Amino acid sequence: MSVDNFGIKGLTDEEVIASRKTHGTNALTYKRESGFLDALKSIAKEPMVILLLVASAIYFISGNFGDGIFLAAAIVLVGSISLYQDSRSRKALEKLKTLTQPNCTVIRNGEVIGIPSEQLVIGDSLMVEEGTIIPADGTIVHSNDFSVNESILTGESFSVFKDVEKADHSVFSGTTVASGLAIATVMAIGNKTELGKIGKSLESIQEEKTPLERQIINFVKNMSIWGGVAFLLVWGINYLKSYDVLDSLLKALTLAM
Image (cartoon, rainbow, N blue to C red; front, top):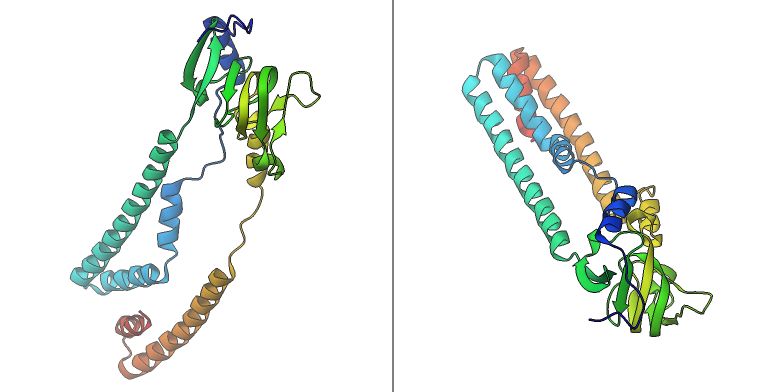
């Protein structure tokens, strides 16, 4: 595609490299927690796993190594399956992100080329047309019957017409081109865009549990209390009969599980 009529040459390869070194890549980076550690903590907090661990320890202490090893192997097996499933889910999500990564069109060295949106740099001459999602914030330098749907940022469902001669001649990452064509100079990328700032601000919001989750937590707490009471009663009764602490513990744990 010729861009001679626009009079825009875009950045050179050297300018692209320099801009990328200074401002980074066009990628949204947020705080990431260790999925493996989170899954491990979740497994360790399971009441059944805790009971199995205690029972396994008691078997080892009492000299019943066969039963202790069997319970320990069961814990390792259950934990491994859970970690494997969690790992597969996280990998699938990461692959999905790369598959859905959009491309964009820019003018560089006087030529129109397509590049992955992540390679966009500040100062690039970005070309957007009807139906495309704008990958970065920028200022319009040329447009033709250009309008944008900015509902993702403003909530307004109607398209906004923009032109280089109007006061509002900025385009924003994540918005969709409703009509026409425009060339914009990229002014902000990644987390520096308006959409990126919104995403970063969401990190400080604490997640609240749903009513169903709260009900389940309360139910589990109540069951744990009653289970604890039953455990202590069975342990006490068996201990008074046999005076064998470890045997009484195992019988009480069996009932609790």
